[in-house]
Amino acid sequence: MIRPRIALQGLVVGRGAVAVAGPFDLAVASGEALVVTGPNGAGKSTLLRTLAGLLPPISGGVRLEGLTAADGEAAARLADASHYVGHRHGMKAALGVGENLAFWAGYLGAGPLRTGEAAEGAGPLAPAEALAAVGLPGLSDIPFAYLSAGQQRRASLARLLVARRPVWILDEPTSALDLASQALFAGLVAGHLARGGIAIAATHHPLGLEAAQTLHITPPAGRDDGPGSNGPVAPAIDDAALAEAEGWL
Amino acid sequence: MTALFLRDLRLAFSGGGGATTGVIFFLAVIATIPFGVGPDLNLLSRIGPAILWIGALLSTLLTLDRLFQADREDGTLDLLIAGPLPMPLVVLAKCLALWAASCLPLVLASPVLGLFLALEPAALFAVMATLFVGTPAIVFIGAVGAAVAVALPRGGLLVSVLVLPLAIPVLIFGVSATYAAVNEPDPFLPPFMILCALTLFFGALGPIAAGAALKGGGD
Image (cartoon, rainbow over all chains, first blue to last red; front, top):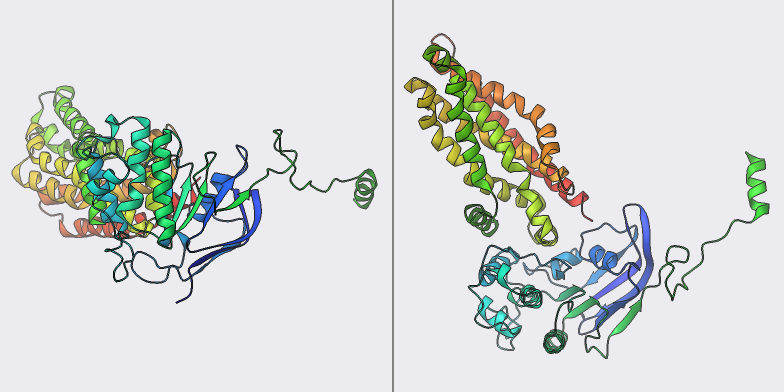
């Protein structure tokens, strides 16, 4: 059995036809984490949304090795083998928290299970257990709208536990979380990695992932005026080239 | 797919989807028409089927603009796109749930409201039957409009404008089938069969087009 691995091959991400960041060439293997950092607007979310299959890449691609999708087949796209946690929660305000989680568990499918995994605690959790794991025991029947911002974020993170996926794509997962909850979530991510999972996270807060690779996205010069704009400079057109071009016309 | 269908149905009935708006609107339109037209029962029973059909068409359009927008606002749409179910099936499940929540009550209410319009019994059942097979086509056409306009903050009007021309054939064949059931020499089956064909055609095309629009419109 080969070790599951994600390789980004010359991946350039962008919105519409405009490239925002890249090219990226790197690989993340099973049990490893990739932390994406960078100033606001550098393209962290764009990269993660591209990885989750929500945006088409401008060029390059993602190669998957040995990842299994929810139906037990080899995953053809990263989205089949991953959870995406974005800025928005994906939970219905009018429904109970447990109801929301039960829907996602049923919709997403339980995820690949190898023999003995359930015994190791890697199997999918029931909604109530998943809520207890993120520190919200007994809130299963409360409508999602009644929770505080931090509780809503934790409840949406419980989705990671009700359906198992080998890859977690996390966009600012710890926003609105207090310190204790951040530590709790860092524990969940560490447990996921220990079971051979992969985590790709964009975050400003340390996730407690000392062993993680860090991908620092620097915005290209000229677009960003903040500090740290030391990206590749676009080739300037000098007067001679301009005159030549005009003469050619 | 079943999970998505059941969740959408529950949301519609718990007041989050606004599916009851369509039924109330339908009721309001049909109940006011007799006052506007006056006490001419012959006129009422002659235009009754058309009024019922127009009311059903407009109230279905009214509920359509929220079909994907609520899911987009809370991030559910992202997860549905990235999820294991192909987009056309997602759209199909959502359309069926919308139809069951907002059009099926319309269909069931139409014979009762038809009494307001002095329809004869044969016309009552003809309206009910044509609405039953015709309203899914309106929902499937509308899903395409709703998917195209999903990113626009006030897309409701745009959806109606986009969808209305495409829904006109459904209206024409629905009303003509109903009249054929009442007026003796006209055959009922040919327009009714064309109505069924329209529903099947848009049932296949609509989800695929709407799925592509939702996927392409991702940001």
